[in-house]
Image 1 (cartoon, rainbow over the protein chains, first blue to last red):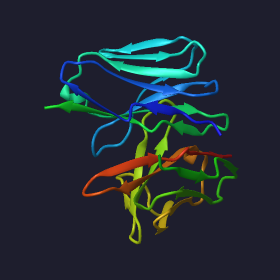
Image 2: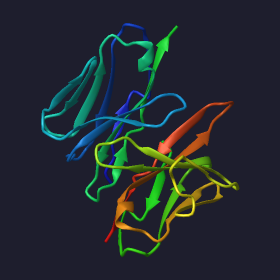
Image 3: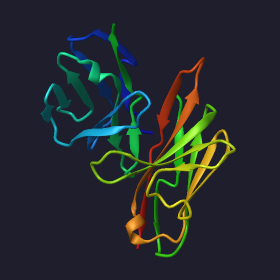
Image 4: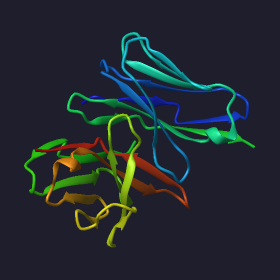
Length: 110
Length: 118
């Protein structure tokens, strides 16, 4: 079935450095969503991308949807301690179900 | 990675009927499972937390007699929407938490079940 591969599994950064997580699929995606889950919390919806080549920004967060709609990325500029958590991508499948990436944990080095 | 499945993926039912949704952890034991409800483009709203062998803990505003949760084994939890009404139409997602070494946990999400009540 459809799968979404998300990398890396973990990323350690110094505060102030940038962070990027990538999601890839072998098939075309109708849309892709991004969520953030803080440690001990539950996923918070960040954004949904639908259009080919779409780029959306939310303050320091930049979301991209590839031209072929098979990949997506989330980039955080100048990370802050409040950015710590796990970032998930999820694609909507043909039967409305969500296909989740495995998540990327953002860890800020002390 | 670990896999969480849900069944059915899509269900349409008549108002007044009950619907059961299953959530299974396929290759790990889940001591804790969570049930969420999601409206379009919104965050997952936690409905209840269930621990294997004990009663579920419901979030404020969630009717425990309407949304029955059973977590009978370490790999299966069920959510039954009793006497469903159109306002119960939503996307229901479960997730399972696996306990790793020490106090570390990993949480895995199911693909969701779309419920439409006519």
